[in-house]
Length: 433
Ligand SMILES: Cc1cc2nc3c(=O)[nH]c(=O)nc-3n(C[C@H](O)[C@H](O)[C@H](O)COP(=O)(O)OP(=O)(O)OC[C@H]3O[C@@H](n4cnc5c(N)ncnc54)[C@H](O)[C@@H]3O)c2cc1C
Image 1 (cartoon, helix red, strand yellow):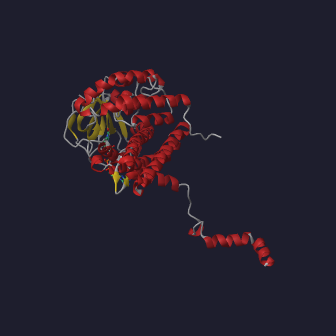
Image 2: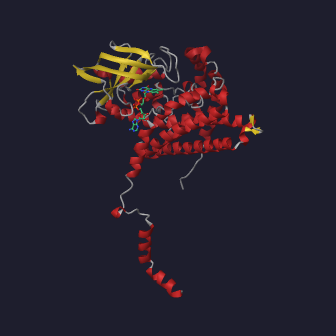
Image 3: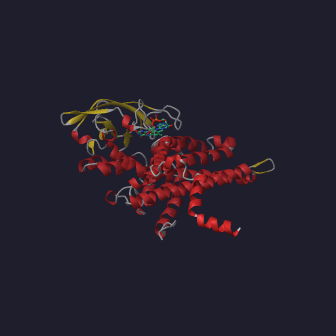
């Protein structure tokens, strides 16, 4: 009977170690983020990497030949739950976005030369990368609408287009660019991926877009989102990553596991917000009792605990399905957790902020930052609406219209059928009367 909710004891010991390590060594650095700035933080984190490597937990998303562990998605999910508790934790574990995702793309699709030139220096931390796909003019939720064009030019390519929200684009050494190579091909075979060194002539990074997370204007900082024009950018033949027309295929291979990692990181955030919510409920008094004795606060606690538990089980189930039956088999489960997890993240952080009142709204607690960061979860990585649609379509495939359009559960129709089937019984009962 293969139905087991336990983590194997050896890996649980790793998770326990991670939890202590992240809480004791990394959480304190968060409070110095402004004083140290990104470079200072990275200097502080540098010595924290070796113990992670010694424990065999560094860049665990990669295959063993690239220094990772080749862990399946369940283990990766459990690790990401711990990493999600701090925005700084992924740096100490070689798992920070977008470099981790880009390294996966290069590992999946890169040629030996591309790996030598871009992947290994990226893994060593000697290069920084960005992923450049979203365009302001068309819906990112439907990437078949992409307009950026790469046209053949002798052996090479010429690229023209306009992108934005290329995270880390303004500090990247290279960009992984998605561009249309054959507009007449089937929608998901139109685009290809290219490796574009950031200093290639024609790559014009015009600004970093200020956001809800970083509302003041800044330039060339880690975590910024660049707006980029590609104007007659000439690329050699070996800039093509994977085969022509395989852009979506490669992106999907990275996105599906990525969604498991995202959801588990969101649960790490939820856990921290939930602890704050519960702690506040124990001592803040209003109207003659502590907040935890008010029914609405009790509802928040119970609701949050239920949502977190449901999202966690759903995500680990999706991960297990990926590990045991492959990515395709887990598509519906992955869509379910994408929109459900994003909503749980929002709801739990919102309640934790609410119970702290003005303190929660202030920067004296990390909740306002969590809240701002939580907001994008509902539309990136496939807008929630698109995932809901995918789930509903998949589910509806398992249903057929009933005969004559009479609902299968229609009681008078069922009664008629039952009367026929059990006529002998009805006769006996009537006769006994
Ligand atoms: C913090 C952050 C980092 C990012 N990093 C990167 C990056 O590194 N590289 C990159 O290329 N991009 C990046 N993006 C962009 C991100 O991928 C897009 O924002 C996302 O794909 C959504 O596309 P869009 O913004 O064009 O919204 P749209 O596609 O225009 O969607 C807007 C809204 O329309 C609605 N909608 C869309 N389709 C449907 C539908 N079928 N049914 C019902 N409603 C629908 C949804 O409500 C959706 O939220 C980042 C974005 C953020 C916020």
